[in-house]
Length: 141
Image 1 (tube, rainbow, N blue to C red):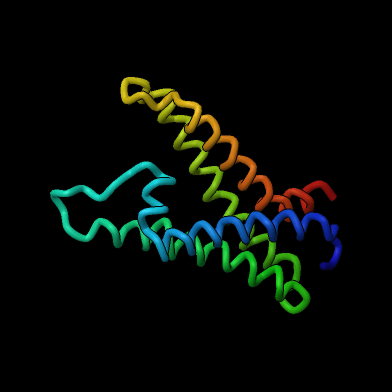
Image 2 (tube, rainbow, N blue to C red):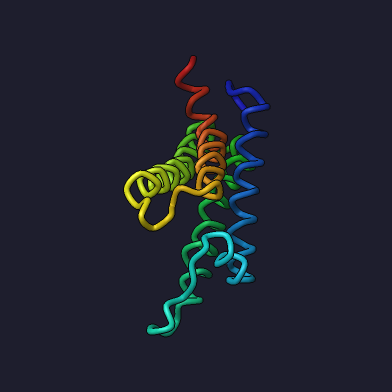
């Protein structure tokens, strides 16, 4: 674990497990992913379920799987590998929070100012900071 405290690895690992679990759940059961993101395939176009399995399923699972892999292999790969992978995943979650906040500010006619979206921003920020923890710890040294 090198110079970064073990509890930071644990926080990052739990966030990566949560993200990978969300991805695997959506990969296996795209209706679950649909219910989380509150979107559905457009009936005018075929193949919409593949998008849930791809973007919210496979991509989310493998992004967070990369973080888990670097955590497991940190002894060989070093802390820089963990920082890089987890920082990339953190940016994903921060981007989601930013997008949701922009929508809440600009799309109020679409009824985006909901408690669901407010909770979503909170969850996304928690995931982002948990995944950014190794990088932030490195900066604070």
